[in-house]
Image (cartoon, rainbow, N blue to C red; front, side, top):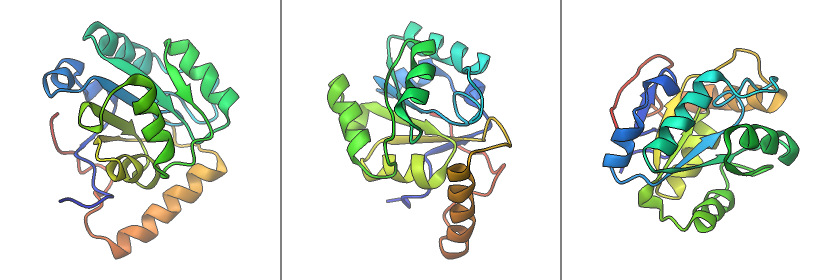
Length: 174
């Protein structure tokens, strides 16, 4: 078994993910992180790249969901722009929110993929729930304080755990 901190796939952006391949791999639910994955952490709108990706996910017959550690009002706005369900203030990497999203959508972990930009919160939490995982690079260099804290914690963790990919070491093809 791979490390809880090692994503199944690491790609530069959502543009590199093929929803048809996700569907062929048995994925029925695509769970997306909010800050710096579908939108800049300080931005008010989702990125055009995220809008296009979610359209492709829906066209492939899969469902989407937004999980955010940010406040529910912030997550709601982004999820509504994409026409997706959401949970805010999730306290990722705790398992509860991942499990709740799966329960709400009636999907088991083997049919879910978590896509996010943070190894500790997004990848570790999803791995603990036995989901497929895809790490993408931050969509924006600016972040809020919690993003900076988890990025710093990941840097420290890399000193202890060698299985965390370095930035730009892209691999995998789901």
